Image 1 (cartoon, rainbow, N blue to C red):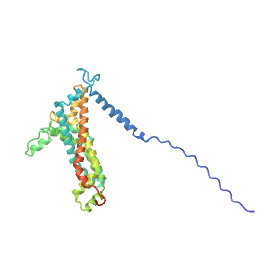
Image 2 (cartoon, helix red, strand yellow):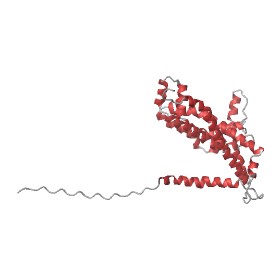
Image 3 (cartoon, rainbow, N blue to C red):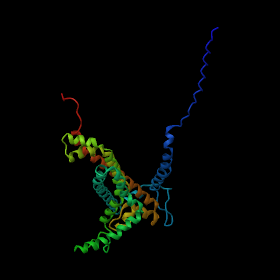
Image 4 (cartoon, one colour):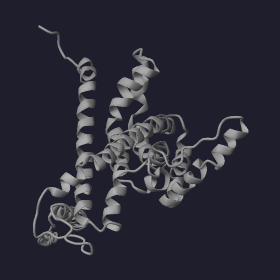
Length: 312
């Protein structure tokens, strides 16, 4: 009698695969789209619509039953055009000064400071943001006043006192102080992402520090530089707190005109037209600056273009 091995058990049937339902990927961006639509597109569209209206009477703010470009003609009159030109000057100078001051500071933090201390350095950069924007600006009013700290310090050194308050120079000082961290942070990220071996390879190939910075570090950090310039230039053009506190009559900016038309003159149509002109001025000036920069750097980019193979 022989024993027979038991027959292997039949494998259990695999459970039916569950069909996973996936939501469309674009739903991830839906909150941001909703936010932009409600709090950006709709207000800007309303301002654009009001800019074609008019102020019907002394006690009414705006009427849109008759649309025209009259408010734009009024906004571009010589009186207001000089203020827009002054705003553009402050915006360009303030952005250039922020870039000139922030670039070496950000490069130093990203490449020279030990890694365990970079967080402390970035925290110090952000310290001004712990205080209210208006309070920081008023602090500069105290310092720049004729009887302020700087004047007393200069008089103590035997120099004449400064009289910068209520001038355009005071506005530039204020905007550079207020917006400088917005330039340092993206520049730091850009310089930090440029890997050290690339700079070392450039030096091994014979390039000195200046050439390594101009031909390796700076081109690779260009996206961060562009982001920093836009972060500073766009809000700076619409700033009116700094000009109100430090500028006086000589440092008036377009943001003050827009605010005065909405709050004091109650002329929403003219204020909307000024706001649209300010937006268009900001966008066009940024596009023109980008085009000029592209044209200026075109020969350099052409000379550095990599050519593979000998020319026939």
